[in-house]
Length: 286
Image (cartoon, rainbow, N blue to C red; front, top):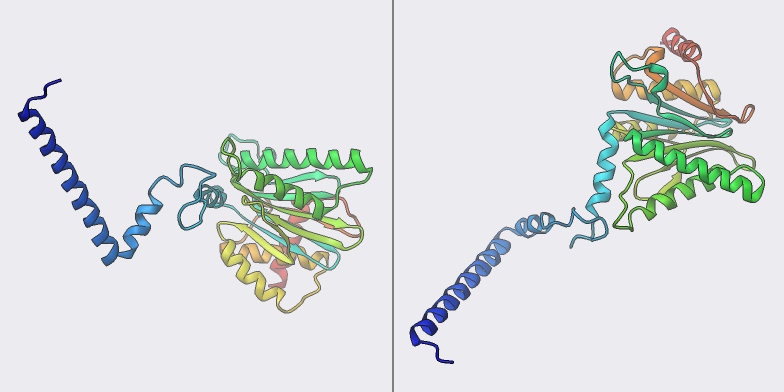
């Protein structure tokens, strides 16, 4: 097949121009990365690694999991958990979205079993899904072994399921954090926190939500003195911590409190009258 010389020259000229353009772009990127090291980092973080859950970025990060942690703050709530010598307490804000909503149906504190309860912080839809799964796991444990699921095993199972959600491309991490309390027959009051990455650990006191850093700093100062909080003291310390980090005084309808004690190991959500009694006692003492 005969190809005119002019066509060959034109094709060669196009190839040469494309090659020179590619070399100039590569040289420009090399110069930018040498003079501005952060430019390479910016290119890698914006290269689409945050679109796939199961793909690590060159820095070894899973951006979708990090975004799940940020989603916890979308609800604009802060929750606190404290473990006393004979009790465990969780407290959170209660925000009713609008006046048409029935306030009794808005809650972030859930009972998993008669002796296990939790406060969920983050996306409420994801929170309810995680609580439903936790109840299923507790029922399966009771059916298989014949006794109630201990708090540490519940936290471990919830964390295992959350970690599994970070491995599958057809799933996504849940945008919520669980603070779990219960009474262990051998070790007494227990307090655990599970995060979207599948990490869980026991705590003396912890928090989650928008003001988590401020609340943890305050709790560290309080726990450093090794206090032995009883039931009343633990509830009031939880209220004081939440009130301090948010910088506001609460009404009984603005907070929710869940407790378990060694005397009464059943998970109980305090009524508005009981919350009001604690608030009154704090106000009188101050």
